[in-house]
Amino acid sequence: MAQTIRINKFFTEHGICSRREADRLIESGVITINGRAAKLGDQVTSSDVIAREGRVISWGKANLYIKYHKPVGVTTTSESHIPRNIIGEIGHPERIFPIGRLDKDSSGLILLTNDGDIVNEILRAEFGHEREYLVQVHRPFDQSFLDHMSRGVVILGRKTKPCRTLRAGRDQFRIILTEGRNRQIRRMCRELGYRVTKLHRTRIMHITDEGLCAGEWKELTSQEREQLMQAVGRDHAGWIVSCSRERR
Image (cartoon, rainbow, N blue to C red; front, side, top):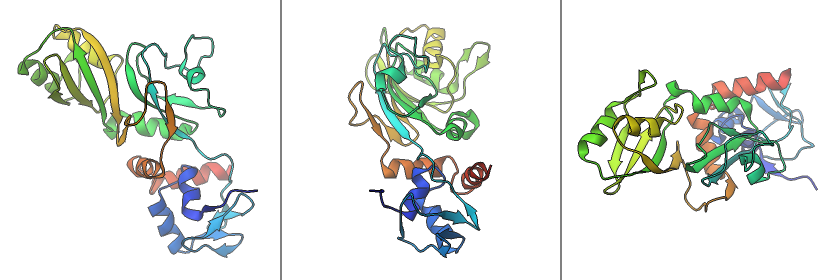
């Protein structure tokens, strides 16, 4: 039996736009279901024909958005011949791939999806999406260390962007970055005379690893997906991109 979902949920599950924007489109009269104007709260199934201004939107496969608590030792790669690759560890039946990377020696939150369009929208530094980490170094540090980290550190010939830091212990701190250069935190610490002994990512944007044990994964909740669509700008531009893709 075909699954029945609300019309606005159809848009979020396919990564087209947020429910709020879907509701606005429905209220404006541009969305139809089987040729009739859609109404707020309408239920649809895969047998229904959904269109915007006469252009049909394919059901296809719904986009997947997964959060995973990567343990130390798992490699962030889709290459199946690599031992303990992240795709093999998760074992999802659909083809998915990681958004960004997390070092083999690091643990914590990483997102995976089958939505290729959203990857750059999350990763591009100019969008300023936050990533938060809990870091432990090999010896205690003073406030000047945190201040220097916050101002930026020259690594690989270029200074890192300003960031936020907060002490979490004698040898632990939290750091919030808006860029994701290769082994950035480890290189920054090394430049200042410290060696990272533990590095754990706790948050990407509004999504956290709360409730996930090491090695566990979950699909994003409806609220997490909704906020994600809004954060990457799919309230407007993303809808147009997705619809143009469906028409080809």
